[in-house]
Amino acid sequence: MNKIILLVALIASTYTTFAQNANTAKHTDGIQWISLQEAYNRTQKEPRKTIVDVYTQWCGWCKVMDRQTYTNPEVIEYLNKNFYMVKLDAETHEEISVGGQKYTFDAQHNANQAAVLLLQGKMSYPTTVFLDAQYNMIQPLPGYLDAKTFHQVITFFGGDNFKKETFDQYKEGTYKESFRATKL
Picture 1: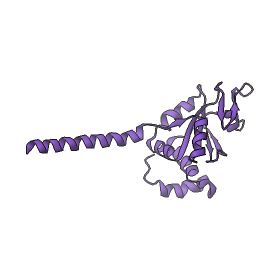
Picture 2 (picture 1 turned 135 degrees about the horizontal axis):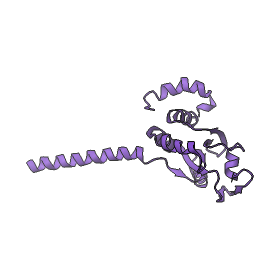
Picture 3 (picture 1 turned 90 degrees about the vertical axis):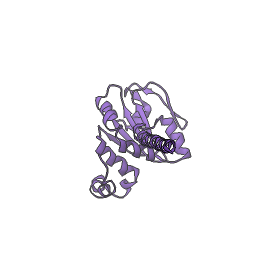
């Protein structure tokens, strides 16, 4: 009888540890970054908005955003559920192909043509670019965003709230109501 109780306790303990680890893994796995071409291909099969994080190797604020914003569990969860996520080094010399269109390095802008197009020629880093499910530009948003502000922005665009209210209206109304329990 004692062996059965011990076995049940061991199984329960193992299951609890497994469940806790699985729950933690959901938040610590990080953002599922893919290439611009892969995001385009996935959008053709399963339409979803895309966010392109346009950065450079030398950009200090890009690194801060990577460390502080893109590691926030609420941000990670929302991004992975609602967007295709792309990291684009603006200064890459590698050719980028998207939907049959090829983009190469543009020496005049010291950036890849894809980055120049996404940033509408305004080369500022970091810039977060929002594309709709048909790969049309919604808006590029230049500058560093902390986790709280970024969460407000991604839910504003992710929930199509930008179609019905201004960002300030959203922050003061819909966001406060929808994400009251968010720990940002």
